[in-house]
Image (tube, helix red, strand yellow):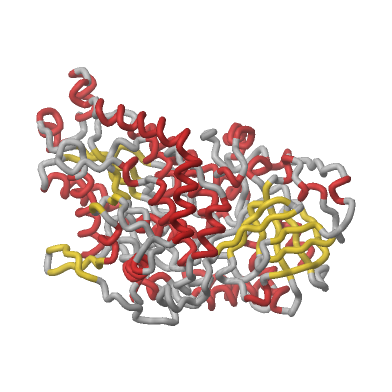
Length: 602
C-alpha cells in the first residue's frame, strides 16, 4: 500500500526543517568513518595498555583484523531489568571469537530505577541521568579502538542516553541488546488497586508490601507498558534491535542466542566487511517517524515525547510536538497493555507482539518500509519471529494475525482510530497528555485549580480531606530548570481515589509522569515552565482552567491571570542532598521540555 499521506507529509516537513543541521552532522560522521578506529595507529605503548587485560584475545587484538567490538553496559544488580546483563559480556566475547573477532567492555554507564526513586529526592536526578549516560558512553568509546559496538540497556533514561551517544558515534555500527521482561507476577491492575486502597487508608503497609513484591519478583523489566518497554518497542521500530528480541524473557536459551547473534551481527556491519552499516544511516528522519508511529499505535510512554526529541537532535534531526500530534491523529491504537489495558507485555508478546504490529502497519502504509536496520535493508525483517531450533537461531514468518484481539487488534479495526498521545495548547502554554488509558468521559475537565509547589503538599491536602469538589491539581516548579523535571507518579493513587469518588479531576504540571501513569487526565511537560515565568507561575487557588484532550485545549478561563507577576519560589531545598549538588550545572543549562530537556544545546 502507498505510504499514508500524513506520514509522508510529516516526514517531508521534518527533512526540510532538519536540513541545516542534518547535513553537517552526516558530513562529520562520514569523515569519522573514513578515518576509522585508531587502534592500528596507536603507539606500541598505547596498544599494550589497551590489550593488557585481554587474556586469550591479546594476540588477535595486536595482529588480527576481524574486528574489535566495544561493549557499553548499564549493568547493575539493583535494577531487575539490568541484572541479567551481568552474564552478557562473556556471552558476547564468546560470540565474537566464533567469527574471528574480539570484544572488550569499553565502559559502564549509570542506570537508576525510577520505581525506587518515585516521590524521593533522587528522582530529581532521573532525567539528567539520561545526558550523563550519553556522556559516560562518550568516555567509554573515546579510546577509539572499536570497529563496532553493542549497547546493553533497557530502562527509562538508559536507552535514550545510549541512543544520544550512538548518534555522536554514528560512524560505528551499533546493535542494542535488551535483557527482556521478567515473567508475569500478579496483575498490574491488582497491584494498582492495592496502591489506591493504601492511599485511602483501607489496607496497611504489610498488604501493600506483599502486593508490590508479588508484582516485582525477579530479573527482567517491569511488565507494564511504561517507559522501559516503550524503549524496547522503539528499538525494533527504528531498527536497532534484532527482530523480535525485545520481549524474550531473561536467562533463557533464546535470550542468550539473541545476545550472541547481536554481537556477531554488529561485527558483520563494520567497515572491515562488505556490509558496512553505520548508525547514522539507520537513524534517519524516516526511522524517527516510524518510532513515533509505533509510540502512538502502542499507547506508549509520554516520556518519549522528550526523549525522542533529544535523541533526534543529537543526529541533526529536529522534531517538534506538532509532529507527534499529527501522527497520533493518523495512527490507530492497536494495543491494550497496562496501564492502557489489563494485559502485560508478556501477554502482548504472546498475542503477536511487535512483529504482528509492524507487519500490519506496513500493510496499511503507516510505516516507511525502506529504512536501513541492523537486520538488513527494509523494516519487513521485523515481521519475523526468532526461534531456537536445537542450538540454531532462526527467524520464521510471524502468524500475520492477532492471537488475542482483547490485547492486540489490526489497524483496520483498532481500539480507537487515533493514537495514544495528544498535544494541548492554549493560554497556559503547551503540554502533552497520554489519552490511551484515559476513559473518554474523563478527557475534558473544567474546574477550579488547587496550586502546589511539590507533590508532598498534594498528598497532605488529600489526607486532610481538602478535595471535595471537581479540581484541577496544578503542581508547578517541577520543570527541568527548577528541579530536574521529576516524575510525579506517586500522585497517581491519590488522584485515582478522587476520580473513583466521582469527582472530575485532572493534573497540570511542568513536571513529568511515569510511563505507568494513565487513567487520570494529566497535562504534563507544560511549557514554558514556571521557573521561566510561564503562565503556570501566575495561577492562584480558585482560578478556572479548561483541560480538554478532545479539542486539544489548555486554557485559563479566569480573567486577569496574565496581569499578575509570576510567583518566585524559594527552590534552595532542591540544590543539595542525594547528589543534587553535583547536577547544578545541568539545572542552569538545560533546555525546555519541548526541545528535549537536554544540556547539550543541540
